[in-house]
Length: 147
Image (cartoon, rainbow, N blue to C red; front, side, top):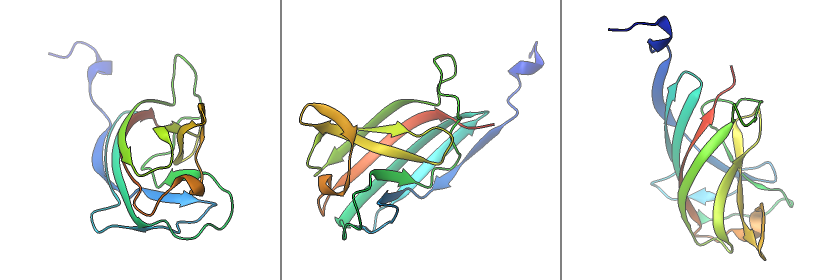
């Protein structure tokens, strides 16, 4: 039996989303027929997302912008504080990037995240030059959605 009304699950949703790889503010790349794909589960403000993006051509660069994944199903919480993190728990697989140690970081209060990697022993947000025509990324992460 439930002894407290706070124990009742009052907000649950699951579904699909389409991750979009963008750089310099545009989606210039071509993906294979199996991607992009994504799924999510939301319980209260906690959102678990997974996604897959695989390129067949990286397209042309229209600037020096950062690599971003757009289209996340819910905007992140703007308060990325230790007692209330906006994101956590990235895991993923990647191949055919020109760098190692690929990771994803979150921008507060928006529906996109940034792809980072180890460039000359420094972790930095990646750009178009770090892609190849066959780069791919499979990932999952948990974050806190905005209220």
